[in-house]
Amino acid sequence: MRIVVGNTEEIPSGERKIIDVSGRSIGVFNVDGHYYAVRDLCPHHGAPLCRGRVVGTVLASEPTEYVYDSQRKVLRCPWHGFEFDLETGLSPCDPRNLRVKVYKVTIQDDEIVIDV
Image (cartoon, rainbow, N blue to C red; front, side, top):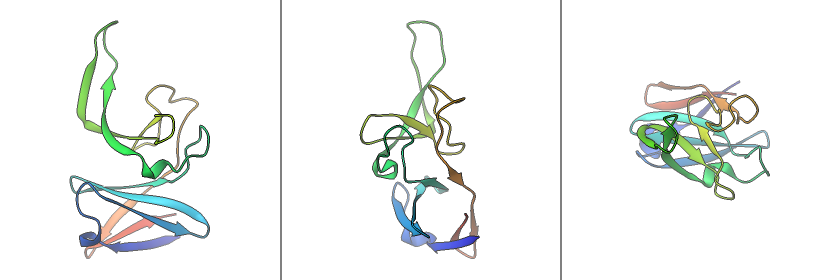
């Protein structure tokens, strides 16, 4: 099912719009002109995930070394800080077992469309 979320002007860069699709809450994010859609439900304890902050992430590196990547964006849960990659929905800390549903987003004639 394809859902028109709205016009690209409705979600400025750095903002989000949370919509309801058949009882399912989905957050649509504009991150520097790139659009992402994520299920608004943290798999850890059911928090409203899409009310969390979009931030960069720490990359795998040497022990005791921390490399921050501001370009790779993750959504951080507002309750317990669990993070999920906006593109893949995978958790950087446990990608095999912890993920959130993401949806394909396309732009058609300035309209934001997600595939649900």
